[in-house]
Length: 503
Image 1: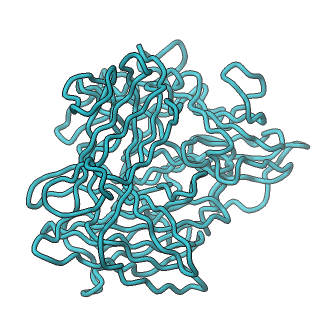
Image 2: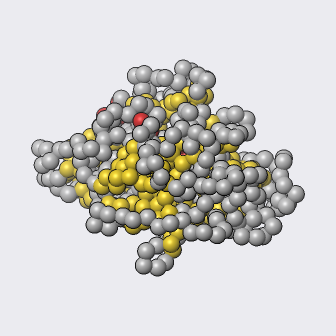
């Protein structure tokens, strides 16, 4: 393995080999082993795959309440049809060993000095072809009628659970798709699909973003809304690593939390988070494995142990297999150099009645690009401890008609979110020929947008409402949404309508 073997913040990166590594809300397809060159003994018209899984969580204690997140996987399957349904023919097992021996995986397991942490299984005789759909099946919390994992760490709370810092264990409620398959369509697979060539090996990695996949409901229960990424990988050559430092001292930022995200543009041209992690005590981060041939934008933010916030620093067009070196963050100045806090509401209605949705809310800054043009970039949500504890709450269940603001539409459920980000403009640089120089953050107002995406609860990530994504750039008084320190800024309310009826 090359030097990009450990993810940031000593966070785990789980690898379940399958022949390819899936895209941003997805699962897996086809994988072969780390460092395996050449082919296995293959039948005519077949290829070999192995499956890997990664997860560099940024919400493990002390940056969140979780110490363990356990999921139990019983199958990973692929289909050559982009329109495959639950009952379609053509689904094939990528890791057939799981069918008789399901595995319980701790998505927050301690990382090792290697990209490959866990092997789910392999299929050395997968029919050659282009696989357009992947699905992952989990063991039901009741156990179902089939085999269950040999070891269960959920202590009577089903087979999928979260363990909080206080040691309490809570069942992780599953969607119906946990049984019929958490699907990854072509648009959610880097490269659009997985190609299995006869006589060749393929590596597939699945990144399970646990931090974005868990919703705490008002009744204290926890629910899984899977956010998965995947694609074909080469663990030896595709990692991206580096170190985040203070721009003045050139040393790691002391105390607090430094977060780094890998981002790629979605269909709207907005950079969204592909993987995210916390740096270690020396400011180092490392993402691996990553899809072969892919480039990413690297976004870093920080709040130090004294509560001083830093600007976001963005490095664009970073190819896999790159150590970007030092990424300098500029500390904010002034009488209150803390971050900005945005607190607003999301509402949901069918048009005639309140209805429940899940919403993922994020903050966006528009950054200038070299040579002209701009790019909307998602800024990783942060937490503060000084002068008071504030936690970003961006994965919310919109499910109550109580405590709605006076401005909420009639017949709507609502929920409040909190997002914390820099009260400064970003610094931007483009990686080119192994070099990068960063711009000085622009003076003047610090403008933000807020984007919310709506999903059907317990659906495994099915979008909801018309439209299913709303972006606003105004505050509650209809002025430009401007970041300032001090009391929270109230953004314009985000109102979803045309949502489905949820019982």
